[in-house]
Length: 283
Image: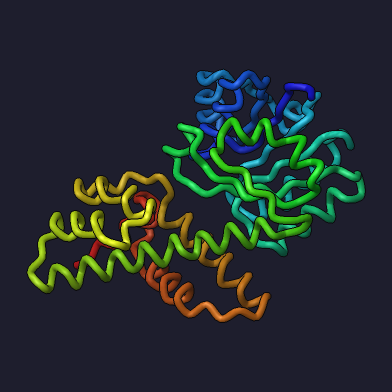
């Protein structure tokens, strides 16, 4: 396989993912609307493209990591026009199945292979190659792209030919959001019972509820450090996608709606600037 990759979207998690591909020997040409992110990418071995079309030139694999459904749908038109039919699109963003199906429709006229490949994990896991990626789309294209997926993920799980990976990502993020909400209520109740913040965090880490997500958040919480690995605003966007996808599928998700309301009630500055786990802060 040709080693040329196009990467569109060099944000908080897209940049370390693309950087791992460059470090693994792939020739990565990246594009982002932010000049600052492009400069950061160049410092990490990624060739800066002047436009989407420039990034796509000669790429056998095209990766996208984009912030919203609207941006992805708009970008899909440029991808349909600029990608050669032999290329594979590996789309890593968190979007709903309806928006993803629109992308598939835009690409189908050109017979471009489309892999839905959202990821689970933090920025730190992206840096270390420890992400999990859920993939759906043509199995032959998954096999073709797997060597590249291995560069930034510890597990690559193929789920089917359609939108299965989109549902998987939303389902996992539903558990992330509910876990964060539960931790907030847990810590508030413990404090009312006379248990200190630090002691309760220690208890959480040693109890049956100590999932990898809980353990990952304990040290920042001990320091009251809410530097974002994923902001509250980002998780609220995902909750909006989850609730809408559930509505379309006829699935009742009362816990998702409760946590969605809790995030929506948070100050906008907190949502924008702090990690999603800052929902545990209480007056």
